[in-house]
Length: 314
Image (cartoon, rainbow, N blue to C red; front, side, top):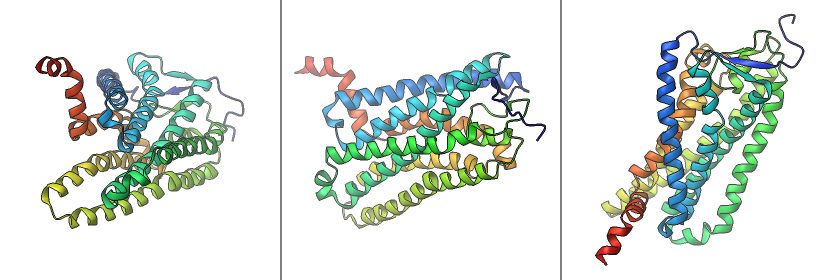
């Protein structure tokens, strides 16, 4: 235990790829581009959902929440990541690291639950279309979103405080780009079995259970789609759900690989690239997936930018 620091550290050093400055410069440019696209894409979806009456449905209400979560999720870590990638200063204060961990973990847990809620919405839309409006009424949608945020707050308040109380090694070098749980567990010089058990339980609650329920809901959706007589109807139902499935696959695969075994060799080495993937790439792809594969959103964009032209034609 003599290696551990018994006092609260002044700050941490986020190593990232500090041993490869050229790669860091390349990553700085790539991350900057992705972050800009993330901001533009998600803000566009939020504005379209509020402006266009065709998008004021439960599906787009939840999509707006996903876009807002992604905006907060990326903004909680990417600006600090860009600062560390740009120059030799890799430090982050203890309070900054704690704030990043609390926000990062809470929003990540909230997104897991939100993706489950979106799967439930698609299940009702495809499997019980005649009752969709009655079941997915505005009050229920608001309650489901409230549940999402409560779960996020619960997840971070359960796990973040115990993580920040770990006996960190004197060097305070976090072998990652952000202050996330697996990286901080690897930094600890003391006994981390309780924290690893805790992250396994939290991972099961917020990763495995929602993923299992999503797969169950989509198995019922697949049966309902195959039972549709019209080929056009099957294609429409498939396009309605495929975008959400792509987002689920991208998010869950990368997060699960990092969080299931926080001290594993893969989590330490490959985890850096996966961290970049679900903090930078996935939030950028989400609005692109929903806009490029969604006729309603593309139609809303055309109505927004073609308003003057349509008015002149009338």
